[in-house]
Length: 229
Image (cartoon, rainbow, N blue to C red; front, side, top):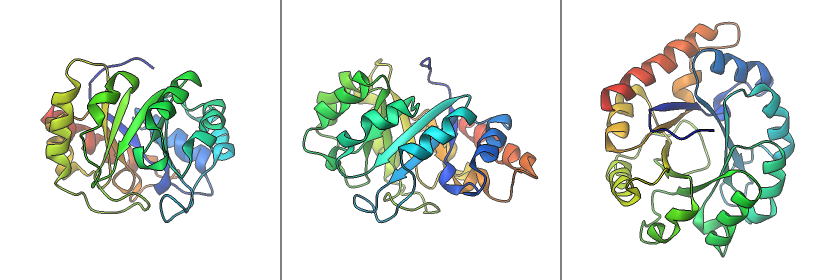
C-alpha cells in the first residue's frame, strides 16, 4: 500500500448485498474502486451490528486492492490482532472507544497494519496534533456513525481543511465517511481529503448482474472528485 494523495473511491460494503459479498467486492473493484471499506459495528459503541474478524477474513481473498477496516467498537484493543490477521491493510479506531488512544494506534502498527483515527462530527481536533506521527489516516465522519444512507453534515468541510493544514507534508490520508455523493465530492476533495467512502452512492441501482451501474456511479464520484483536486 503506497501513499499518494490522488482521489480514491472506497465503496462501503455495508451497502452491498449481504448474501453475495465476494461477488459484490469483485464487481466494484472491476468497475474501478480503489479501496474496499469494511464498517465494523458492535452494537455498543454504535447502535448497529455488522461484521467481525471472521467475516473480514472471508472478504480478504476477494479484495485485490486495499481492505480498509473501520472499527466502530468498544474496547478496540481486544480486536486489533484479529483484524490484522484477517488481512486488514488499514485499521481505524475512534479516540472515545478506549482509554489510551496513543497505545491503541501503536498496537495497530505493531500488528502490521496502517493506523487510522476516526473523528465523529462532535469530536474536537485539539488532541490530534499530538498523534500525527502515529497515524497513517484520519477518517472524518461526516455523519454520526452507526447507519448507512445518512445525509452529509456540511460542517465536515472546515474540519477537513483544518486537518489538512495540521498534517502539512506528513504522509497521512484524509478519508471522509458519510453521505458522500457526486454533488459534494468535489468540495470534499478541495477541502483536503483524498479518500471518499461511499456506500449508497456506489451500490444504488446496481447488482452483480448489472455491475456497469457500479461503474457509472464510481465514475461520477471520481469525475466530481477530480473537479476539486
